[in-house]
Length: 308
Image (tube, rainbow, N blue to C red):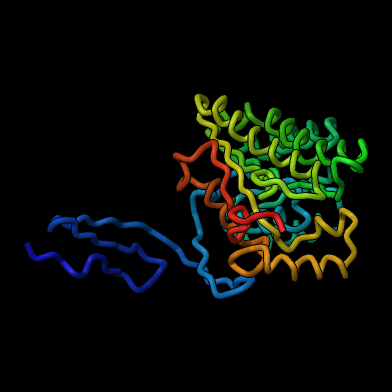
């Protein structure tokens, strides 16, 4: 039997119009059509095409850690897809900037100044979101804290600080919003870390907290699946954010750390916040409707290597 050589052909040149794709399997032609809108953005490291997802339009997203790094990029990406974004962070001036970014990107903002480790503030934040928007569709736990320390010198205060922000707050906010997500058949995406999957020296409490996030993600996914709520996590490698400097690393040492990280990530560079945001956007979307309990490595291959 003569096999077709041309397996797939795009039939529309205008990306704002429906595009059809044809696949020949043993002579049987199957046509698939999809409406896609392509938005060309300047990528952090190279040219990239961003797919805009209309399914987020009008939906309500809660993003913690929204004033910087991954959380800020996630908030903006949701806004670019016409979502209503509740951006939570501790820095009022940064929240004002984020509010303007969400508006400029096409979203509807609600900025909330709050500390994720404060139970009262978290309850008030969720109540405010429901009162303002009447629903919640997605929770992204992106707030995080890191400081150095080994089994020999990590203080209880440092241990508690990382557990409170990185794990306890994630658990509590998931618990608070799960009834609302059950109503909308929504989902949760937790920002974990490669350190949740691999052990690294000198950041003991951080590693343990992120390993806890991974297991929390899996357990919650099982428990919430019957209610139609999905729970997933992303596990980034080194990403250019402010977390290390806020944890006490000097600018000089941070630059050295980023340079060294080029050698520890097989792909040869560190990540950018928007790259992590793209994966979170996908996991939060209807395209990932059959994915739950997953912890996705997005780390330039870092989890494949030995600690160095």
